[in-house]
Length: 69
Image 1 (cartoon, one colour):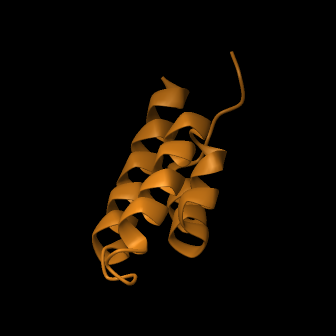
Image 2: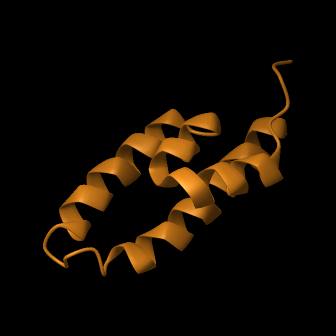
Image 3: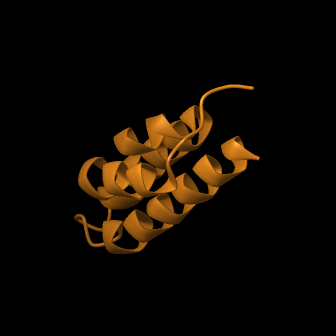
């Protein structure tokens, strides 16, 4: 069994570093969110990130929880 991943640490890292913090819990998810941050952030002048950031945090927490199962 691999190392356990902390859900709280995943939330904190994603809160402060966005999709780069998701690299702790899910690399494919982080790459998807990085693309979405650019694709949605640029046309909306950053306003779209207000929707994407909580989604990234939830996704990272779920990925960390699933890694522990």
